[in-house]
Image (cartoon, rainbow, N blue to C red; front, side):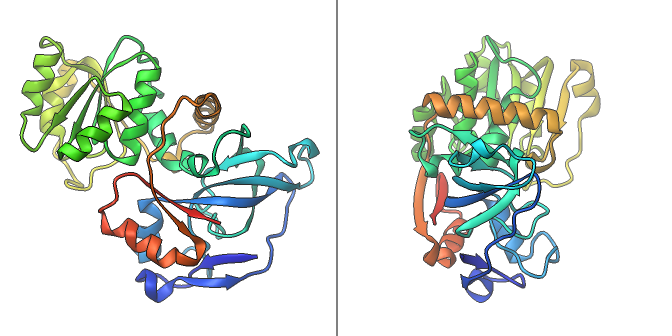
Length: 326
């Protein structure tokens, strides 16, 4: 099979290789998927660059997200699954072989069925961006008739988060850093878009909510936005945080949050509990198969241009998702 891989960490142009590898062996409980699209996420390029430590395996085929069609099944898997179109999650998490290849063998639970009219490109965005958004919005209960703040509404996660919150009956506020990103967040369906570069977020949120604040916050920058969030979160509100790059060891205003009864839910989408993983898979597939979600696939590359794709992701200039066509 054709595949991209690396055997050491470093710059994309230095370590990524493209060529032929042996087809994967199919074990019991697995499905063999002929891949059509591979989604690139920041974590993929950070792992390749060495920011996540030493390699776990002698050779790594990158990317955790992808989509394709099941062409064979292992022992114990229903043969009726052959022919299914699927999206994949955690393909490269704790595994040597990810989705940047023509074939992958993977536990059948990590291959989620999609309808025939769902594009492979959009399905390749479900594993990390959409799943992170789903957990952040819905892991702590219904948001129907609640006010939700989605931090970074023009990001890959934020774009899906706005949509999922709206589809679930919430009133949605989001923050962005430019007029261009404000248009993206508005397209996703946000009720209130705040440009934090030239607007006071606390003032704008409290004015919009008649000083009520927000019930839930889905946060990409926990430490950096803590001073804001402690002011706008309601009593018994929830902050679901999946990132804190600007302030990796934030000082927590404990009593301020405690007296409000605020719950903080930090999470890593790769390692959430199995029961909620099933809810995410079922929930996202429901929205995906109905055509309810918009997708922000900004750039697509051929697998032959894997180095350029990684460099583009690392540049930080892309608003949206990057997908490799296999």
